[in-house]
Image (cartoon, rainbow, N blue to C red; front, side, top):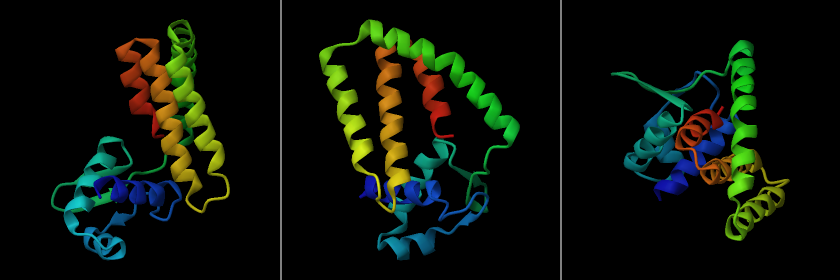
Length: 152
């Protein structure tokens, strides 16, 4: 149930059904999704860890702000430094099993076209795809850095 609620909230954030900077009302989400507040809070804690929501003491949760043009440009530059390195190292360490996982993820990403929540699902699969590459590269610092950057 926790994963289903997380996926539903993730999809709403990615599709901007929950707009940036808007307040997130736990009780409303619980009613809409037909669950108690506990899985909503757990999902929001995960999303906070990923930088998609922000928790303010005594106020609650809100959707994170969108990146400014400068922040986006800086993020892009940093990823250009890290991702080619990770891809090169992953290619050197590639096994048939990892290649099968990557091909499976690519098929899943392609299969979701046309789905109304396709972007949220695609973003999650894309994150897993990049995580596999970063993990296969064998550099935990690069893996952790890319994991933190991927959501944006």
